[in-house]
Image 1 (cartoon, helix red, strand yellow):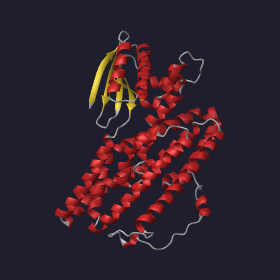
Image 2 (cartoon, rainbow, N blue to C red):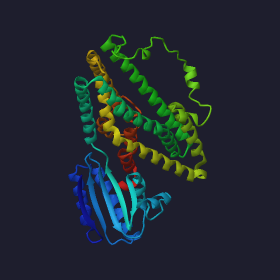
Image 3 (cartoon, one colour):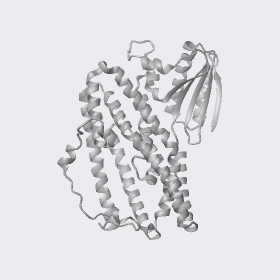
Image 4 (tube, rainbow, N blue to C red):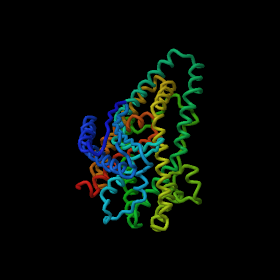
Length: 427
């Protein structure tokens, strides 16, 4: 943990503001994030002085092991929460504090306020986690494989069974249960919150159509690439992994009806999609529900705020699960090494190489969609991709990647885009 601190008051404000910028630059923070942080510190400082009746503000710059950088502002005085002021503010360009409130409003999600005894504490999230967590995940992958291989050679079957039943299986089950508990609410509230953020239903339809087309297009590309790579590596045959239970191997073809698939998207009640975790039905209900709320406009403004708060709560709960990702990956690799026969190593290696090739090709397709459909630069997306690859390969589960993806989509990148579109950037 790296920490730098200084005292900020009305006399040394200009000097210390530049000092803060220098400290952030030394931590290799991007210029845009440095400017954003300095603006936020300035606005919060003057509000603490004026509304909190503070004489000075203690500022700390913290960087943890994973590269997450925060600026903590602490002052003694009357209870004052700037986030409440932002929540109650109405967007009015005739307001004399319009640009100041736009700064706080655009980056509200990167701010946090606490009242500790007689102190107001405001924390500004400057930069999310760096590649340190990815390095830890890779270490857990390698360490888990090595540990499992050693246990397989020196331990008895009874000991291995005891370790799997006592440590590995319960840990994985608890983690997956926690994910299943949160995934449906997160998807529902995220979509509803996003749809209600659009004032006109025509805008909702346009964006929804784009999302559906992009999703179907990317799905078709991924399926075609997967079939092509599988044909190259395995000649069209289906490889059978040694040791797979016979009950899990079925040669019977699966009957599929496109009409029935479309019909099943619409549920017959409101609760069962969330209770059963049926993703397509959850998306349909969320879009339908969000569109209705959006059409009511100011009549349900309080309810919309409640949904936004619930969305933030569940996203935070998902992000908290990320603390347990490295040990989960470690146990998963131990289990993989214990259950994998030596004869299947070559086959699994070919599968892994094929998966890497398809993943690389898909990553090459995403920037095209981002540029052509989103009309934004794909560089922020490409910079974040390496952080998500180790957990993805280790878990082979989209559910396990949900916390990381939600943090990527709702965190620093989203606030950076909002800042670039804000009118105060040139002010």
